[in-house]
Amino acid sequence: MAPDPRVTAPTYYNTLVRLDPAAFAGHGVDLLARVLSAELGEDAVHPTYIPLNRHRLLSAARRGDAGAELPVAEEARRTCVTVPHRLLLEPAAGIAQIAAAFAKVRERSHELAGLDEGSTRRAF
Image 1 (cartoon, rainbow, N blue to C red):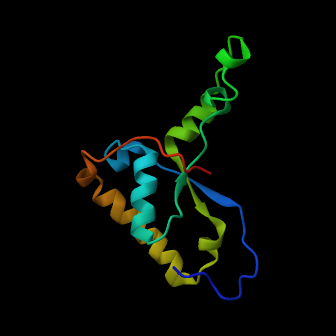
Image 2 (image 1 turned 90 degrees about the horizontal axis):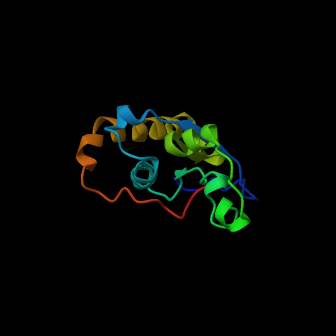
């Protein structure tokens, strides 16, 4: 989708979309984000950042303590992708394109077997 010419400044908020991994053949959000972005024709869908307790600069080992568990953040990282707010400002046809991309990836997710499930460095 091409940016609307009326947009004079970028927006930086994203909408969080929670995915049921079982509905996507058990695939992880890193792979699903890449496939959804490809389906939409732009680098738009991303997983969330890793939880802070696993961040390499903030890790417990680096701090020298036992660390904390962040189960809600871990669940969000495992099940959520982000979509830029600007895409949700599209006319109805644009919104339908986003919904169709999610539906197509869900329906054909069994075909993703064997693709790289590795973590992406691109995350919101």
